[in-house]
Length: 121
Length: 287
Image (tube, rainbow over all chains, first blue to last red; front, side, top):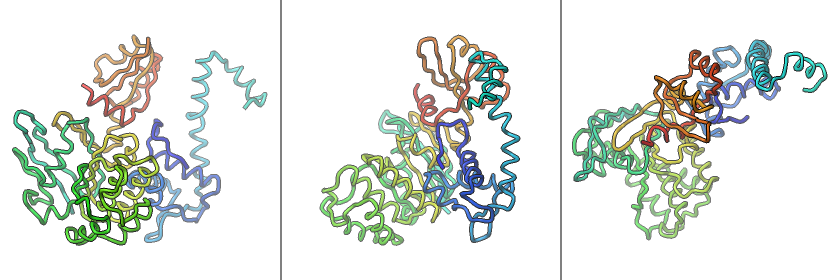
């Protein structure tokens, strides 16, 4: 995991996404415990309020859940939820940016399709 | 609890107004960054808070009680100063012992464990310490004091990158374990940005900004592109600092990014991006 302070994305969102990435990769398994807010705060040198905000985002979405006095755990079905959400965001985060950059470079839609089909990825 | 209030604080030195009518409330248990250029009045503010000097007008209270010659209130605050105040001939060990007398909650065991982490030999005398190790030694006493309010004036002065990193981590570990009010005055904005919850900016003795870091950063953005187009974008907007490189111009705009701004920037072929705390600080305090 790594946080970029120069990114347009707020730190707490980067943190939430990094945790999601690790759930997708299987580093954090469903029903498994994840690192604590304190550990996140100390190792990334961020204010615990920021760390808490990132974690709460995932709690609100049902990706993580709190076990009182024990810590944070990955919900059952979290992986599926993240996949769904990311797929929905795929068009906006990747396709739109791709088209924007392509138009700057005068690359046509046909060129793009050819590149994809030609496996130039 | 440790609610700090500055009420109409001014401090004059003969003709100079070091602080000019500062009103500021610091809620308990947050990490505040006190930012300002050299001579802005940061140290004066901290000296007043800890009753080292007295205000010309106004009052400062801790949980409602004035700090003015109030030993009970002052014992709740630990102030790590830039200046050297410890007797030079004493060893670190001896100073730890003395600290316990002034701050009964001083945690000696924790202080020694920090010495080990920073590789500071507690048998050394104060006068034998390098600039960096003097900062470390003072920071260790502050962290171990267990005071409800910790005040750091340039805590990482002379520290190398590894020790600065360790300091921020130990500070956060301490804060996570025992939440307290922490006020840090520093010029190294970039590396402390993430640690802070709120930012206080003073300029020429006046409070000009006080906001949560996250809000401060979203309250502004940078616009960049061809100078003439940037000027079109800037019409009627509040901007702070600008940089020109040939025909390329980049300006800090004191306004949130919204869909209207985005559309306008897109039509003009301009780019909008996040502003860094350090850049925003420079823009706000540069005039």
